[in-house]
Image (cartoon, one colour):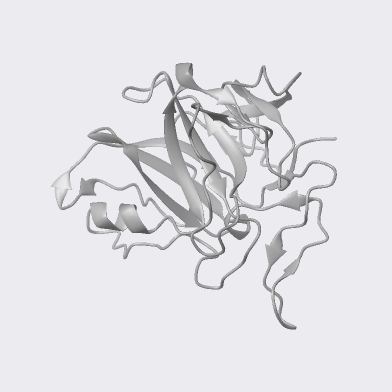
Length: 237
């Protein structure tokens, strides 16, 4: 069974496609789901809204300075759903002006998700929580894949590449993109993703998959001046 479901594009591009991991222990590089690689003693990140452990979605190992030798990991909450945080808080954007990302914004906007960077040599696989995604490694090749890792982002609504940090020129770098409408298949026994309903309170979905930011295209950027700062934005299909 494939790890993901999404609308395929006939347009060729350099991307990372999925290869099933033989074991969780061997999946220490760029991959989706399974057990995240964390340094000893690091606590599993929690949702700042509901307090639940965040679901590990993916980790990538860029070959770009200053992130070479690092793992960049994305965690999102699948245990709660709030209409104000279905997607990350978005900065005002004017296509005729450079996009300025305030440092204070980056320090507070990760409410129900987290992007973390660790030294790969210090990391070991951690046992995943119940809300877990099937483990697949990412293999670099030309293919239509749900995670784009090289080249430029595939924008759906225009270029929103940031260029400033606190009003000063900064070297923002594209790190990876989750393609729109991607669903990450869950392991057997994993609870359903909690979602808002029109009828009443949030409930667990009956799907055997999780969505990141309700299926929007997700773009992750890092800034070379501070490799632990990450800007996440989304665009809808």
